Image (cartoon, rainbow, N blue to C red; front, side, top):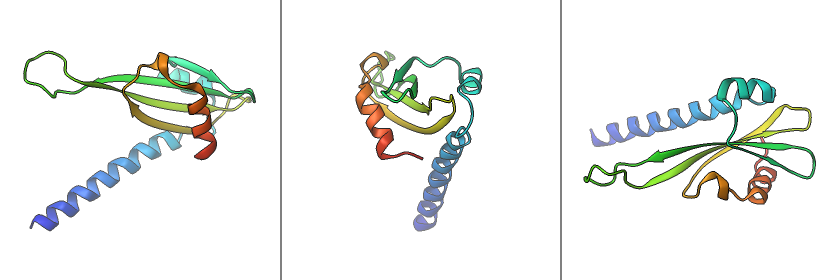
Length: 118
């Protein structure tokens, strides 16, 4: 019984991760105007030396790690949408970090895309 529950939990987790990936994959080839219309303005736009842009979307997520009723620990959930010079989305990346959007290392974000282009 425990193995069955574990298998079901793994399948649900795998399915939810693949759905999140599919949600981002649908943006590949779409225009940055359509993205902005749907998601709103990014918190930052990073430019690279080839006239591409990285739209940085960030949400601060608070965790409920303590019982005091005061806001506990937090992290930032980032979505990076890579836009080519023609204004089309060609890649995306997401991650969770402790630092705020002002401290996002633009060189790192650009180089990460070069390693994991979709």
